[in-house]
Image (tube, rainbow, N blue to C red; front, side, top):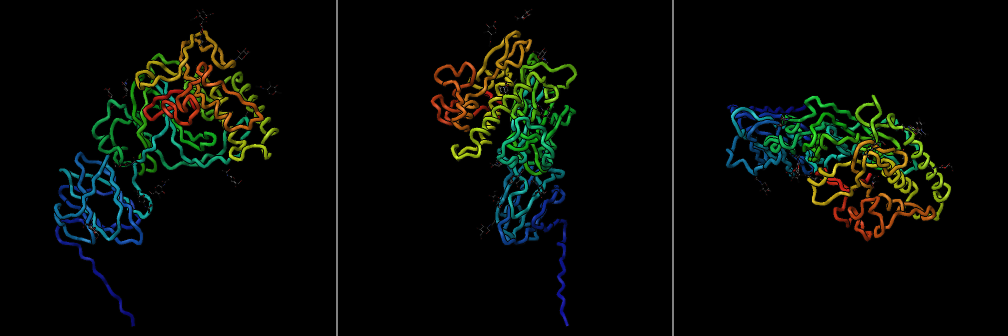
Length: 456
Ligand SMILES: *[C@@H]1O[C@H](CO)[C@@H](O)[C@H](O)[C@H]1NC(C)=O
Ligand SMILES: *[C@@H]1O[C@H](CO)[C@@H](O)[C@H](O)[C@H]1NC(C)=O
Ligand SMILES: *[C@@H]1O[C@H](CO)[C@@H](O)[C@H](O)[C@H]1NC(C)=O
Ligand SMILES: *[C@@H]1O[C@H](CO)[C@@H](O)[C@H](O)[C@H]1NC(C)=O
Ligand SMILES: *[C@@H]1O[C@H](CO)[C@@H](O)[C@H](O)[C@H]1NC(C)=O
Ligand SMILES: *[C@@H]1O[C@H](CO)[C@@H](O)[C@H](O)[C@H]1NC(C)=O
Ligand SMILES: *[C@@H]1O[C@H](CO)[C@@H](O)[C@H](O)[C@H]1NC(C)=O
Ligand SMILES: *[C@@H]1O[C@H](CO)[C@@H](O)[C@H](O)[C@H]1NC(C)=O
Ligand SMILES: *[C@@H]1O[C@H](CO)[C@@H](O)[C@H](O)[C@H]1NC(C)=O
Ligand SMILES: *[C@@H]1O[C@H](CO)[C@@H](O)[C@H](O)[C@H]1NC(C)=O
Ligand SMILES: *[C@@H]1O[C@H](CO)[C@@H](O)[C@H](O)[C@H]1NC(C)=O
Ligand SMILES: CC(=O)N[C@H]1CO[C@H](CO)[C@@H](O)[C@@H]1O
């Protein structure tokens, strides 16, 4: 004969609402002045728990407390235990169950929030990894987010990389772009909370600005989500966040659109020059859309580039690859990558705007002014027909070829001390005497939209 034990769980009298959370779980909850506090029992677990709370709405945040053990009564806000503070609408707590979470209403009416409970990395997060800016024009912005850095393998790609089949499907991603001057206190209240920030008004993407989303391969950097956003306002500061998977907030990134007179179009999505994702002094052919892509490029530009790329790949294969004479620290793929980056940077000059550059940063970028009839640095690109300023390639783009390639190729860059600065940005990333990362800015660009030299 077996004895069945039956537990009867009695709901406490009164209107306290008590919920047992399972591990792992993601819950959407409400607390209101009519029903406060909400009580959440968190069971014990063999490993430490990561509890995250993301606020979704409410002008005054609820207050959250955590206490040891399982409690079913309202202890009063004074005795509710350790208070968990929210920053930007997000809070992460790490500890062991069993414990009890109390949510006390902060306002009249109700406030909604989400609770993520896991023994793994916190479900709701804000990262300091911002999306990346390709470039802007007067009305467009090109923005990236790395999605899968594992592709491709270090194998030698063909010179003419064609569009790679089947990019991976990234997790759901939401681009949020706000005019910086319009940023309200509600954005700051929610800027770490995936749920909260997606409900903040003022996101221009939701106002019908055309947006093209693609997944592009950027050489050994792997796959990226690429957004081209149009119909922005000229000479305007914007602030960008990307919410991934409805749980993680990436950002912010800042950018300034160019002035209305800026006339160079964006070039992007060129499979054999994956890092070209910026404004170029090449006129848009009639009827070819709002930016230059592979199909709208003249063969006058692509044929010589692909011929150089093939010839270089050919010499690399016959001279060095697979032989012991070449440094074990560098592979032929690294050498080809460095050469491709340099060749694309000099074949596609980059346009910028001196006024915008001067206003944003105390460090002046590496610029060269061209008149409408000047030939460009690339013999395959004719005069642009309008004045423009070139943002010179960083000298490191050339020096990377020297560093990565076998000496048999006899690659020579202009010397920093002699005349390199006529054609390159010198001393921004590395110091002038070559100390890596020791230049005045240590990088080609920052998250505030400042770019000092072109480093694909
Ligand atoms: C919970 O228990 C731990 C260890 O016993 C103690 O250090 C902590 O102060 C307690 N927290 C609360 C809110 O009672
Ligand atoms: C819990 O989150 C913290 C960061 O908040 C992290 O360091 C830790 O590794 C996480 N725990 C697990 C089991 O992943
Ligand atoms: C990378 O190389 C390994 C071994 O050569 C191969 O099994 C794998 O499929 C390759 N991965 C990709 C993404 O090409
Ligand atoms: C590069 O590859 C594309 C797609 O395979 C092809 O259409 C094009 O003709 C090739 N270009 C050259 C210069 O080989
Ligand atoms: C931003 O503010 C400007 C005026 O300052 C206003 O015209 C515009 O509609 C606002 N944009 C959004 C998206 O709120
Ligand atoms: C954009 O932001 C920068 C940095 O905050 C500021 O110096 C500049 O004046 C702003 N420009 C415009 C047009 O709002
Ligand atoms: C997305 O969130 C779900 C749970 O909501 C989780 O299972 C999944 O691993 C997450 N994916 C990524 C890529 O973060
Ligand atoms: C390409 O070059 C040829 C010969 O130099 C020239 O006649 C033609 O106009 C060029 N095409 C374009 C689109 O620039
Ligand atoms: C590539 O090599 C071929 C054959 O040697 C040569 O005709 C062609 O001019 C070279 N291309 C470039 C861009 O140097
Ligand atoms: C550019 O060349 C055209 C034709 O040769 C000429 O009419 C025009 O004045 C020149 N523009 C400038 C700014 O030199
Ligand atoms: C542009 O052309 C003018 C007049 O021909 C010349 O003085 C100037 O040096 C040229 N600039 C560049 C960057 O080639
Ligand atoms: C990675 C990162 O920026 N994390 C921040 C998320 O928000 C919390 C609370 O504001 C910060 O303490 C973290 O540094």
